Length: 275
Image (cartoon, rainbow, N blue to C red; front, side, top):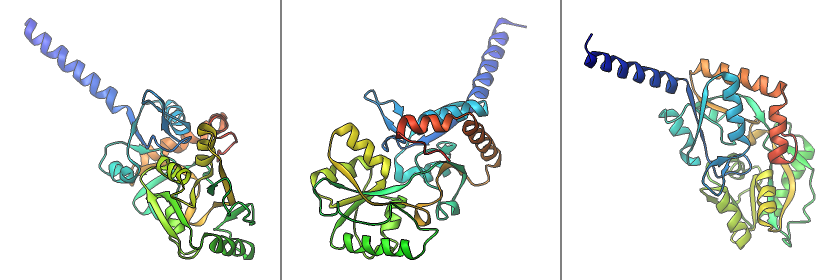
C-alpha cells in the first residue's frame, strides 16, 4: 500500500473517531442569566446549580457534556431546531410546555415569590406562608383575594415567557399591569430603580440578587407553587427522544440517591430544594 493511501486511511480513521466522540456528547442549553440556577462568572464561563448538575448527570449517563448559552425566549425553538439536545434552565414542568416538549422527572422545586424594595407599602401584606394553586381551597382563595387588592394599580415586573408571567396574566389575581423583561437581571435592576412597584420570580432569584448586590430587596406575601407554576423543574427534551429521556431519568434517580442534588441545592440556594 502506498504512503499516500496509508495517509488517507489514517485521516479517515481519525475523522471517524472524532465523529464518534462528538456523537457521544450531550449538548445542554441554559440561559446563563438566572442565578443561582444558571449564570456566568466574571470571565463569561457558565456557572450555577444547573451547570454543575448537568455535568453530574452526564457523568452518570456516561457521556461527555457541553453546556451552551441560549436566550430564554428562544430556548424551546432552539431545542426543536436541534441546536442542543436538552434544556436545563430553571424550566418548570407545565402542561402548556408539555404540549411541545417532553420533560424528565423533576429535580428541584422552584417556589415563586413577590418582591419589593424595603419601605414599600406592600411589606405588611398578610397571607398564608405558601399558596399551592393545585390544592386550592378557601384559604388559598382568600390569599389570592388579598394579593389581588394589594396589586391593584401597581406595576408588576417579571421575565417574559415564564410561569410568572403566565400567573400574572391568568386572572387569578385580577387584571394586573404587567411589565415584562428579557432577563431576570433587567427585572432586578428596574425594581431597584423604582420602575416596578413589585416583581415576581423564583424566590431564590431575589434572595441571590439581594445577597450579591447588597440591595434591600424584600420578599412579600406567600410563596407560590402548583397550577400555573408547574410541578418542579426538569430537563426539557424533544418529543420522541425516548432513549435520552430514560437516561436522564435514571441519572436523576442516581444523583438523588447519592445526595448530589441536595448538596448542590444547599450550595447554591442555601436550602435543600431537591425533589
